[in-house]
Image: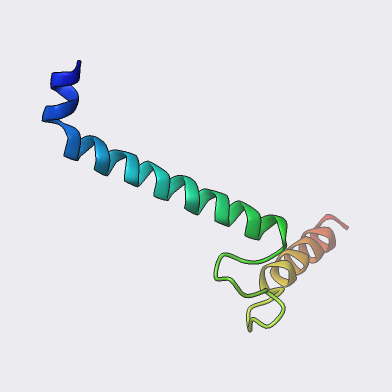
Length: 69
């Protein structure tokens, strides 16, 4: 077992480093999401597209309701 670790030490180190980076990024994104921040680090309130998806969803729902009447 030690021989395997010694022969592949560099690969194991890089793998552990990549795993640590992925865990850190996932943790950071989760914390931002819990705090209400977006993935860009700003809030959605100042964005030009803020509420755009919601507005389109409301328009689609309203048009569907009109069709059903």
